[in-house]
Amino acid sequence: MIIEAKKADLNSGIGQCIAEMVAAQKFNEANHQPIFTIYGSVTNGTAWRFLQLTEQTVTIELTDYPLVPVDFILGILVWMVSFSQEH
Image 1 (cartoon, helix red, strand yellow):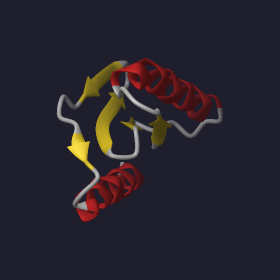
Image 2 (cartoon, helix red, strand yellow; image 1 turned 180 degrees about the vertical axis):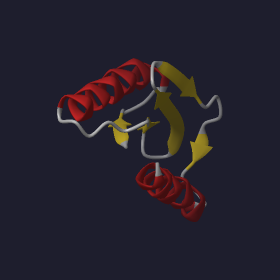
Image 3 (cartoon, helix red, strand yellow; image 1 turned 135 degrees about the vertical axis):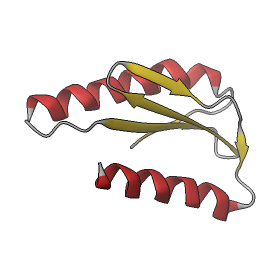
């Protein structure tokens, strides 16, 4: 999972987050530990947007989720980690 933090606009971090996700994918493949799906998020601390890289396809969640309630954001992050370990 890759998290990209930005001071303001979430859109400005999407490209950078995708580049980091692709780099993580290539690093894992080069080390013979391919990961089918890489998850990412861009946040400014109060809003979160989630991304998914599966093979060469990037999916960007169009909804920006507020930090509050924090248990919702934590639930998404825990799911990402749990799901990626299963696959």
